[in-house]
Image 1 (cartoon, rainbow, N blue to C red):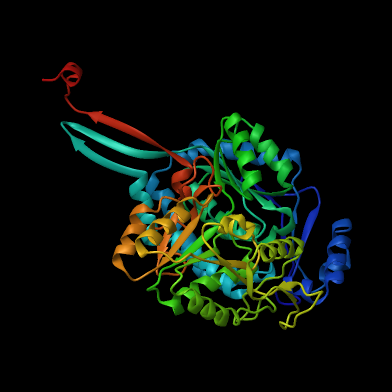
Image 2 (cartoon, one colour):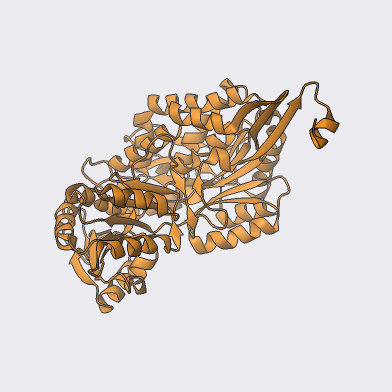
Length: 533
């Protein structure tokens, strides 16, 4: 944000109105946290005690959001429940138009979207990547496909047959702290399905969520004739909000994004209270590199592991390498990793983000080395300029070599998501290609998580075998960016510890609706239908 720019101020958005809350939370620029942590923290504390303080004029302070109490959380739910029947009755064609309008508005306000995310510590390159996700999710190709899934008709022996999806009702969204605005923007898909929504903006990082929903999406709902209450946004404590959603008879679905252990416990609560859990949990994505892969491109995809310092659920978390090319691949990765650097988030060539709690990173690294892993590169804290330092807030991109596929999952860094810039490259034991192919597939399919998988190979037999036999995960990419987004294909979703019991590729418009079949007959004898003509 530019110094001197008017402070953004958002109330609670309920039933189409901006409502006062119970105090404020303030957002200070990410740059301030790198330049002067003490001042930025002091400003927030001062303003949260006294909203009229002159501290609001400080250039580090960029916005504030009102805090919801229990009554406001319930009011938002009630507003959504009141709006849901009327919005569901609106023709699908008009609801679908909301997605096209949203995309047009995002394109028009692209610079503002990026600016908002950069202010919240997202490197500018990654902010543009996050925007690219939404542009593909709401592309005309994707929207046409959603419409086909939502309503299809057939003719059969004097009958008009309809297979359609109907909205679930009221959908509550709980976006994560690492990417709240792009995740919250998926709520537009739930509204396109005919649902009314309530979104919780994370208290610690609420500004971008309020901006994308209140300033970008809300005016579009007026344009398509949605009733007030179709969209509601509150900034509130997570446990406080989720507890009320779980017990509310007015909430039908809860879209939960968070860690696997917490998410699976939350799933049980949802089912016990008759609610549909839609889970986006941890990922432990793998990239498989076969012996004939283009190693330069494969290494480019592998370095995506370090974007945002690995604090993105859909980046690669481990690599499985064919033994014939392992040494060359590791050397190529080491060269490319050198270009992934720290810095201020508004600098074009920066891809690393600060990591505040590093104890677990060093614990994982130390245990892996004790178990026999080899440090290829990295392993230290660094300052803004990349200089190693005991007090640096960045971590070097760190690559480990783990020899032996059979024992690889004894390493926690291989078995589980780490959420750090820490990547193990597992080198398989030498064997025949036929045996290795089977073992690679078993390794992928036995992963406890299931978000994304990637394969790098030229042999068509290998590619076809992977496409046919990989059942784990919501997305399989072949010879492509691991994190890049495409029309038609899902941006999120997966199996196992990623998506829970009901896990699969996550199309929010489909996940927040249910299938219904309809037959409309003309001059048909019920007796003949049952017993035959």
